[in-house]
Length: 476
Ligand code: SF4
Image (tube, rainbow, N blue to C red; front, side):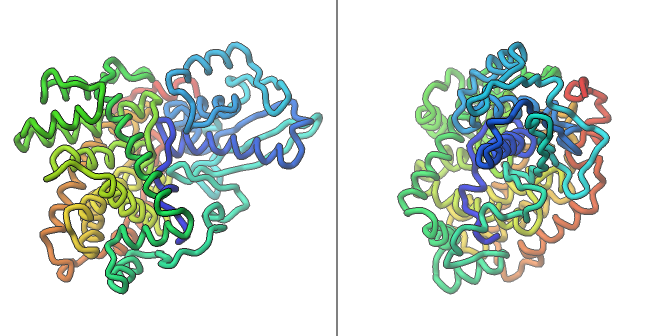
């Protein structure tokens, strides 16, 4: 899949999960679109959605059922007003019907969304069976949510969606290809990626999209730094980002992100406070994610806080205020590293545990930051390798099936490791590196396949069992 674009890796959506919220949302949209294209909507009298494997085990806590409802209502994750979500869900629960195409059909979320906790699809951990009742017969189609909001149908090879694109001038399958292109062209990593993106978009469009992503990331950080209270789901997790920021910079103004960054830049903070600021931004974004706020999958929702926190680190503590060109270069570099993991391993926690989410996001952020601090292409790839090397084997065990514990704090850890990895790589000679990025990706995938299912987004092991909280699973 050397046709994955940066903008496939960064998708605007709502929390809390790219594989369990955004993916199922896109699956329902696709299923309804395909029904319409086949002319079936005129005969539609009912819909049923059956969640299998990890989607069934943690779908309640990950808001899979809510995503399905919103998709049936015709909403889109990129454009829905996040403050209206609860009201729309309450309305549907009462009405028990929805308009699909030009037909009003019965749809009762409690009966028509089924969590098949004892059923696992043989081909994928995140499967969803979609059933359309057409008069007296049923049309059944199964789809997989393969991580990061990517979806595929049961009978379609993964990558079909991007495979239809034109091949770019520098098709990158492995990190070694990327390095070779950089050496041949003299371009930095972001330059090679930009040349590829220009196969599909004008350069101005690439920049416009990158800045739109950055603005969405900043907005989720801003909202997260402002909104107090307790996260939904029943775990009673307190939102901490606003208090953290208040402790670091009392009386800080949070209404305007530019002023917020300027205040932090001018505060001349010592090292321990810098660590707190970075952690605060990561936590802020993931508290927003946990509250079904708008975030950017980077490359997933569970890990949505890592890259914004590292970009905010650069914005707040870099030698000069961050420029739009730097933001674009960061995101192109990070996106390419994420694509390498997607192509050669996985970015789905249901396939590979948290190393596939926080580990990959940390590697992406490390590469992006290394690109901005003057690292060579080999050092950029080394930064990604270092960040992943120290996330290998990290399990996914969300308590109560919610994307809160350990997820929120884990974003802070991923961001801080990314900064350390970029700094280490920029000081190192890659000629002496004993482990390459391609090798660490291979090891990550081997580890993913050997990891016990209990630690792959099922909430059947680790902290999820030790804390014996069942809020997300209570009604399954
Ligand atoms: S533990 Fe990691 S992979 Fe699992 S839901 Fe939380 S952030 Fe995602």
